[in-house]
Image (cartoon, rainbow, N blue to C red; front, side, top):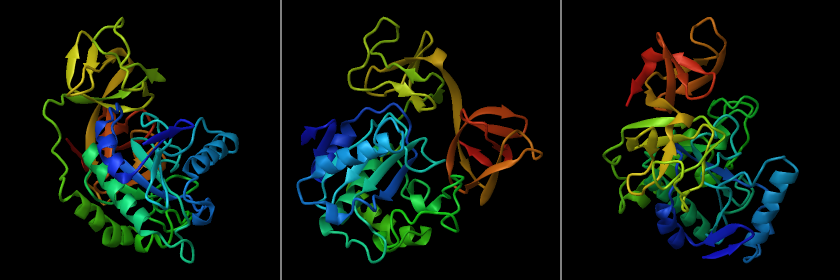
Length: 329
């Protein structure tokens, strides 16, 4: 591994144990797939990983006005992976679908007549996606692994590429950018990569989930305010979903293996649920008289913070949906 400009460079063989060792407070439900389009393969000379990553960060900060580079990881044509923004931070990659997500940008233009993906790059993309599914115990389906193309640019609503969408991650990304292309060409390869290391069951002892209500919530080594901050985990950010394993005098333990605690005063309880309708309308308030602001698809997972009659509020957002079409876990 090599570190420069605040980024860590690693091979896929190094990435797999590295991601397993990371202590991440927020709950992850999706892994986003993107291509950079520009820079493309023509901008890569075999040893300018850090320069290209820094150029992307500078563009995101100076031109887009973001606080950091948009993605968590960038994969390169030679199969190398660079870290980006903190894993505790929500990415800036798919409008409307960034919360609870990990974002990967794959360097290259994978539209038809664009770059031909190298074998090293192809293998790294498959294996790093599998490693992330393994790390966060995600099922290999088109609700956990998502393409930018499936979300309308102006609204952030998922429409599976039927209009107003980018081509990202490319019309020739593993055979295409449609949901059917992903199911046919990409997901089986991720499944195959996981066969030697199956996704473990959710660990025992999970008591509940909470959403962070403070802008930034420190993680401490003991359940008291005077305890030192955890050195291996960054502060949890507003809206992050945390798994809770234990409670002690108003403090919440967020790790099953480490002594990592947050103060419960700055969280609110949420319930994990799955959509059981083919398409479920999301409204701006708890009733059919409120405007439709989004649609969710069957099997998508969400976190519910408030239940009012037959209506449920999604986490900290002003988005409501019918309780009758949810399966609670």
